Amino acid sequence: MKKIYLLFFILFACNKIEDLPNSLVEYPEIGKIIPHVKINTLNKQIVDEPKIPSKMIILKDSTILYDGNIGIEYRGSSSQLFDKKSYGFETWDNNNEDMDYTLLGFPEEEDWIFYGPYSDKTLVRNKLIYDLSNQIGRYASRTKFCELTINNEYMGVYVFMEKLKRDKNRIAIKKLENSDLDSINISGGYIIKIDKSDDDNGEQVYNDFNAFKSNYQPNSGTYQSIWFNYEYPKAKDIHNEQKKYIQNYFHSFEEALSGINFKDSLIGYRKYIDIESFIDFFILNELSNNLDGYRLSTFLHKNRNEKLKIGPIWDFNLSFGNGNYCSGEKYDTWTYKFNEKCSDDFWLIPFWWEKLLKDEYFVNKLKERWNELRKKELSDENIFQMIQNYISILKNESGAVYRNYSKWNVLGKYLWPNNYVGNSYESEIDYLIKWITKRNNWLDKSINEL
Image 1 (cartoon, rainbow, N blue to C red):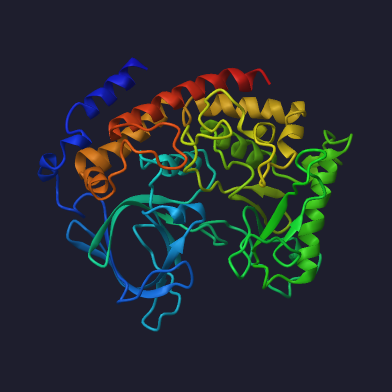
Image 2 (cartoon, rainbow, N blue to C red; image 1 turned 180 degrees about the vertical axis):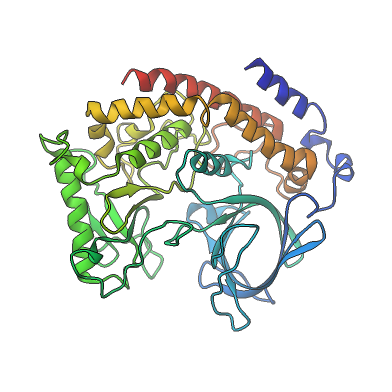
C-alpha cells in the first residue's frame, strides 16, 4: 500500500491545477493524446428532444477518425441541471437516417453518448466502475476519454460511451418481434428497467402502458411501489401477450422469493434468476456504495429460454463517496439497506436483496466470488493502477484536466451532491483513493461475516 501512495505522490508532485495557465503550454495541443470531437450544430440549438442534425469530426493526432452526420440531443435527468451537459447522439447517413458505424474502435452501432463528468470532479468514477465490470466478465458500456468542442466552444473532458441497448455486442439478447407469441419465442428477449419513467410529456408517470408494478412493497406498511419499465421492446411496440409473459415471470420470481420455500433449488427463486449475475451486480454496487444502486438505472434482461439476469450496471456518478445524503458518503454501510436510511424516498429498493442474503447458498457463493475477485480484478493494486492510468492520460500526458478546469471553474466549490469538496484535482483523487481503501477493508470483513 505504501508503494501505491508513493506512486500517487510522485504523480501529483508537479503541475497542480492551480499552476494554470503557465503549465498549459507544457502539454500537447488538443487532440494529440486523446480524441478531440468537434460538433457543428448547423445554427440550431441542442434540446432535450428531438435530436437535431449536426456535423461531427473526430480527430486524433491529426488523423480524422470520423467525419459525417449525426443527430444530437441533451441526455440525463437531474444532470441536465448542470452547466456541463451530457449528450446522446446517433450516427446518420447523408439522408439523416440511422447508420451503424464503428467509432473509436468499438463495435459498430448507431447510438452513442458523450457523458460530461461535472459533479464528479475526479472525472473517472463512471469509467472506473464500467471498466471493472468488463474486467470481471460482466458487459458494461465501453468507454474512452475525449475532449469535446461544440460550435467552436471548448466543452471540456468527456467520456465517450456506448448506449445500453439490445445488440449482439451490447445487451446480447434475441430480437423479439411483435409476432413472437408461441411458447418458445415469447420467452425472450426483454430488457426491463427499474428507473424514473418519463411519459410522452416528460412527466414522471407510471401506468399500465409503460410499466408494471411489483406485487410487493419495498417497506411494509408504506405507500411506495416498485415499478418495472418496458425498455425493450419499447412500450409502444411490445405486444400485450408479451407484456403478460414478462409480468408473470417477474411476479412468479417475487412470489417464489417471498415464500417459505424460497431456498428450494427447484421451486424457489433459483428457478427464475441467474444467481451469478445478481452476485456480481451486488458486488459492484456495494464496492462503490452507489446511491442510486438497485433502485434507479437498474437494468434487467431475459433472453429466450434463459433465466432473468440483472445488469448491465449504469450511472455511477453518485458512487465512491460522492453523495452527501442517505449515507452516500460512508464507506462502512450497506448500500442495499437504502430503504432503512431514506424510507421516505419515492424510489426505493425491491425486497429482493434482504431476502437473497437470508439464503446460505447465495451468501456462500457471494463470499467465494468476492474473495476471488479481491485477489486480482478488485484488488487495491489493480483499482489504483487503473486510476493512475486515467490520470496519466488526462493530466500528465494530454493536459486535458487543465483545459477542463479552465473551462469549468468548479474545483473548491460545492456541486450537488458533493460530500467532499477538494481545493484541487489532486485532493479529489486523493479522497477517492482513500475512500476506496477504507471501503474495501470494510467489505472484506463485512461480506465474510454475513
